[in-house]
Image (cartoon, rainbow, N blue to C red; front, side, top):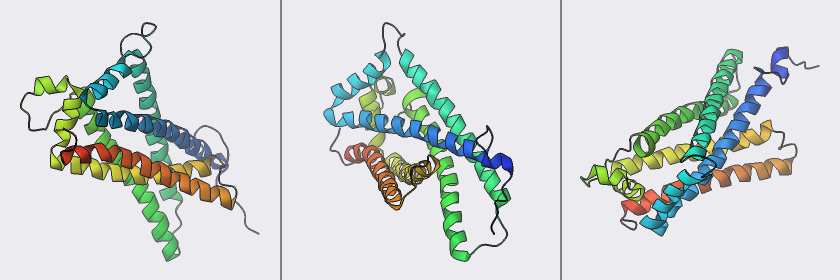
Length: 239
């Protein structure tokens, strides 16, 4: 008769347990899914032209006024996202360390290849996305770096539309961005699927099928929605 040999603390829902950390990852991941969908929607405003895109960029800074100060809600969201990011990375790091420590010496070859690839992709794909996120914030939010060909940097950084368009007119930057979106899509697919399992939403074969379809749909829609505007800029449709 098989017995569960996991330590008791890993079978409970207490803080620090495996179940708690997986739930923390799922919850923080859902927050990020909501954010990237909203961010993707905002980026698609670039198809409506400079005025619509800049109006949107300014509007998100004034939401909540006069109850909140200028950029007040934006900063609340930023702090919430930062807390979620720290929680997500912490949970991922601890779970990864536990998995390596608990890994048995012998595996069936196919199972080992599949599980190792999945785990390594999520781990290194997450690191890649974290590095890209830092660069993306520096480029469009914190410093506002224009690597485009237009020399008037001061004018461009005060114009979100021009900053966006001129950066993605640079082919190598667009390629980096598209590769990051591939990483994002794969991370979302695996993450959504894992979250549905953690939250107990895959108890039946039909539920697992729908969860898998939902994971692919989120990944394709989000990654594709982010990728379209830079491609249209690079090929001169948006200028």
